[in-house]
Length: 189
Image 1 (cartoon, helix red, strand yellow):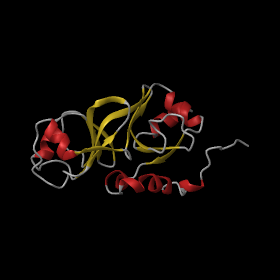
Image 2 (tube, one colour; image 1 turned 180 degrees about the vertical axis):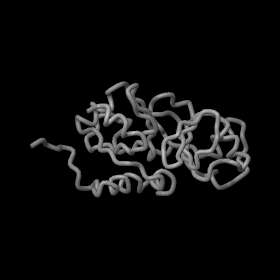
Image 3 (tube, helix red, strand yellow; image 1 turned 90 degrees about the horizontal axis):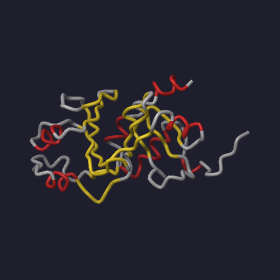
C-alpha cells in the first residue's frame, strides 16, 4: 500500500486539515516536489514572508533587470534549511540543480536560475521559498493516515497565478470542498 501512495504524491498538494498540531503547517497548502521511499520534500506555497524578490536579489548581489518579478513575495517554504532558497518554476529549463516535478514544473536549488531571472532570461513563472518541508521514510504516509492532510493533484495555476490569499480555497476546490465546512473534530464511523 505504501508504494502506491509513495509513487503518487509527487506533484500533489497537501492541504492541512483543521486542527493541525504543528504551527509550521496550520492553514497551509504544501506542494510536494519529491516523494518516495526515502521520504518527501515539499514547499509551503501560501505563507509569504516580509521579503520580496527585489530585496532577496539585492542580498545575494544580483540586480533584477526585469520588474516583472521584483514585487513577488518570497515564501516560507518550511522549517528545514530556512536560509536556503528554492525556486519552483515553469517551464523546466536547464539549470544545474533541477528536479523535474511534472507538468513542465521544476524545483531548482542552484543560484543559476536566479542569475538568469536577474538578466531577464529566467522562467516565465516562478515561486521562490526560503526553506522546505521534509518528511522521513513513511512519515508523510503516517500523517495522511492520521487525517493531518488531504491530498490532491497539483494545479500549476494555483502555484503561480492564484493570489496568495485564495490558494487554500482554490486547492480545496480542486477536491470539491469548501474549507469553511471542515471541522477540526472529525470523527471516525
